[in-house]
Image (tube, rainbow, N blue to C red; front, side, top):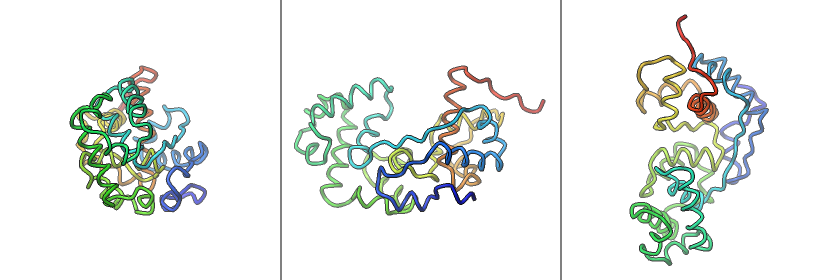
Length: 233
């Protein structure tokens, strides 16, 4: 491992939002990955430099990810703007001070209202402490998050990637990642979630970088900026 790269342990030891992975660090991690896996090497060659953007975390950060689930980017942005305007500040006490009908008036579906209220109650009851979450290792942090109603493994893993900047988290249940791997491998079918988790083990301790790279690769494929590789020729 290149000692100049940030390690997963370093990411865990810093407060939420303080982790900043420079383009140079991500570039070195990409090379490390590409040297070990031809699938990553194909995505690496086809994809320009990456920027790891850390977004705000905590209660509001997790609630925003719940809001964004299963809706378009534009719809999520519109709903989130209404949620922020309606609550004034996205805090557990503010959520719990509004009834379900009012929360639904912000554009939230009934299930999402239940999930967001459940997360707020968990914070109020001391079940989860977002200030303490970053001190847990990846597996412990995922387990703590998925224990919350409405938070599945994908949400937990993407939260830790985007809000904590954790380098070794890989949300294998993500369809775009499954498809990116399928195309890069020239396979007929996508790997199911469990198999992709196993496949990604060789990318540790930079599975998060691999995920960012594969997402970028998939996006470029979808936009027609690059063509699928011709394998076996």
